[in-house]
Length: 58
Image 1: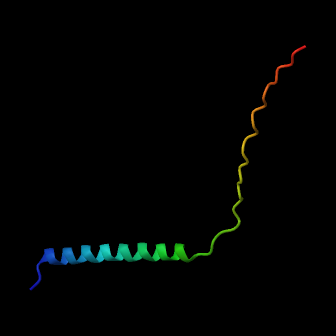
Image 2 (image 1 turned 45 degrees about the horizontal axis):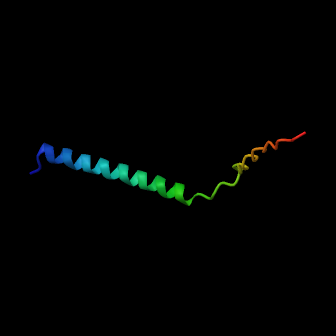
Image 3 (image 1 turned 60 degrees about the horizontal axis):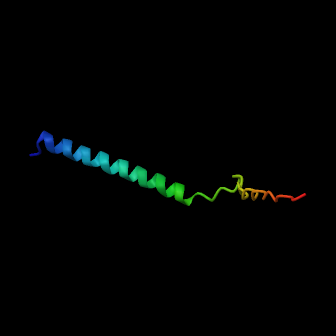
């Protein structure tokens, strides 16, 4: 009725489907977890402007 290769193809397709379902489930759980607020807010200030050298005439 069914050959051995058909069982292998079906098992492979089922394994691929299982991996995809697990990956999609993991992606859904990571998308639904609340936003983390314990991270530090690293606001980097701009560098100080270069000092202009003004010549003095004595």
